[in-house]
Length: 446
Image 1: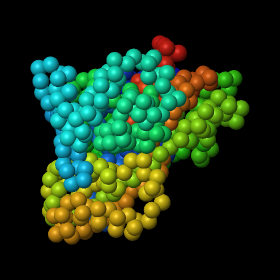
Image 2: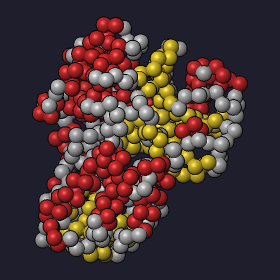
Image 3: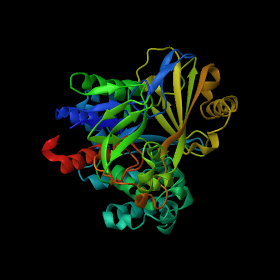
């Protein structure tokens, strides 16, 4: 049977590679000249360097995504941190939020929280109590909280504003790309249960030590070269073709029809309706209720090194997370390349580059006095307006399943039903679920 995959992002690549590994032929169609979707890098003319469109951090809990990197021979392109250690700067006070090794694992986690001096003693005790409650929650418990927002749930569980600012939002804002007042309590609770509580390694960071295109797009394409998979780039799909409630193919932007028995769309929710025939659009109309949120990445190149950490969180500042790209990628350059990652970036979405340069250079000079002696050589801003879908209250009732009412049409992507927020892990989980559905529906016909 002929299988067409629309979109060469993380989910599309994962489906294509997993099918190819099982010697199931497929055709991957991507509208852009490169693969990787919302995770890519490009050559910056001013700095003469390859830079990422956004800073990506992988945590140990992303087991399916890490396995996918292994499958496409790309696992050596990420650097694993041996344990959790996050330098947190707040009001000129630097504290490390870090894991500790104890024979009894739970004691190590308790000790980590007890040593976190950005919280008062009573706040640490209350935090431990709430984390313990989360650790005991079952899927049915937090699914019932989908309509409640995460902020209210935390307040109802005696979490102070300072605890929310210095602990919960430290993880939640970059992971969920939203204010926690706008996030489903179900998603927020599951995030901390999986990424912080379930295993010692789940919270450990792994950061790409190469550009994102090398990590994903290029590695997946190289893997697929030795298979019967065909890749078409620079080609957009205008519509899918449905006959008698069954898929029969797709029509490209240049009006070429490609016949197919199975079509998998990995397009984002705001694009799925563009390719579905009008008489089937009512089935997909809920995708319009899934909103997208922006992320802004700021790249700064300084003449001299002044920042030694790999990364740092800065609280109470326009800077949220700051990454030492020179150190992460083992650059031999004499210049220091710093990346500031701004999640929930509504404030910066339409801000002029010149204004942002003044604000963030001033902030870096204030926080890191040594930077005043280091001349700023280059400054670049990358704005991703539709970076992730928003995990707003009620989101779990809106997210669709992989299988659709049209026989042979499947949808896949981070926004499709799962317990995960908008992450590369969710995209690979969705890819895996899509393939399982196809096998159930078509079995040995593949």
